[in-house]
Length: 283
Image 1 (tube, rainbow, N blue to C red):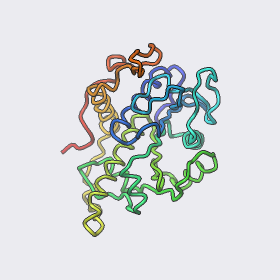
Image 2: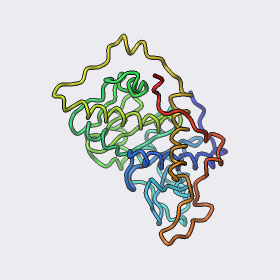
Image 3: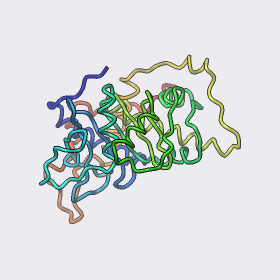
Image 4: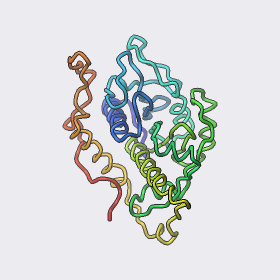
């Protein structure tokens, strides 16, 4: 089990959560101002994206947008002017009830949402194309049947009951909730679920369900490990975002650069920011 992040890691993790938000938006998994990412800090607290008076959307998330609060959303400085997301209970209840989870992504990816609406189950219809997505689907990705805003702890607990022991859940007509032992794992899982959903949609017009890959093929595919599945893919997306200019300081509409506290670190600002291979497609 991965160690729980502590207070000493808050500066690095604020940067990482901001990066995660920008990456999810860059990849089309989160759009506009909707969606949020959280990571556990110690016992009973989390870093989570809030919405400030100068909200710019997930693509332009800054370090200041990442707030340190308890699982109920309390503890932020009121003078900062930030509001917590309406669906904060998704994060708080997940982290409260699942000690093995250290990070949560809630987003509205279009392909996964469309699959949920159309009743297209996310099944292991791909193999070496995307091994991690295949394994997630082979073990099952539940669908929470309600299309409500999950803004109360009771609704979040209902969602978690539907999710069971799985790390992800499609929310019908809404989006996804995805968890991980690390932030990188939760983000990469989210991207892989959306990739599988896109293939599922593309295969659907054929008029018949795409077959699952054979059990002997599943058994033959290797477990590439977290260093490849999560860390290398995370570094790839950080490098891609940097190349696109999405890790540069945010600029206000009047052209003035935001103060240092509102910036996101450049790739040189973190020891983890190295270019890595794309995806988990060894072949």
